[in-house]
Image (tube, rainbow, N blue to C red):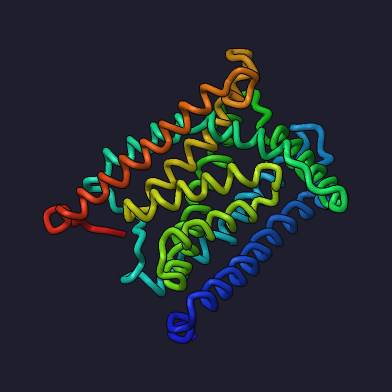
Length: 315
């Protein structure tokens, strides 16, 4: 069966890996729910998690644990299987850092500078309206977005440093690793085999990456992020760069919420680039993002020309 899957069409492989991911996720979520019931707690919150209002409810902790299990089952397990099938012909290595540390630093600074642009795109995206004939769909989308935002606010309610550390793990570190090994480490290479064009593979993956999150009022900025991560992975040949970018994007959001909660910074910092009069920030952010990507591209080309001297052990 393993050989049959390895030799199957890339889209068949992707479909099988997605199916395995969903099965793994439901099994892991089942364990969490059983443990929760055994502890004497109700799982009624699952019917409408967006209605939770108290960050100290046991349901919040349960949802956080379930989110971790979802990331492992849906993303990490399929990637492990994919790597076992394609370890020798995987274009994006998990660990491949020699000669790329400078590239990683450039990309990290680039992602920090990209936040105003992402906020600007998010504000623009949320202002879009569907035709009158599709108002029912738009209402559903906005209701989903409101529930998702409410749940995120509950998740990011932090009173102690321990809460901050746990949320950095939950919202930044785990998604940065799990989502990148699946989308850029599994899906993108398979689409690359099908399309033979890395631009097409990157944008298809970015589209699906954004679609998966089911937050359509933030669809375009998330797709742009997915494309940025995709180019970083392809040009550098490693998943380290998109993981760093993903970590910074999510981690900064958590830190901003922490400092707002501590009344150390103004709430307007959270939406810098989208506030009135912030157009220049968004424009400068765009220029820095494009410059950073160009630097990664030319650094990767220079590194490839020196490949015989710089090749290192990979994992």
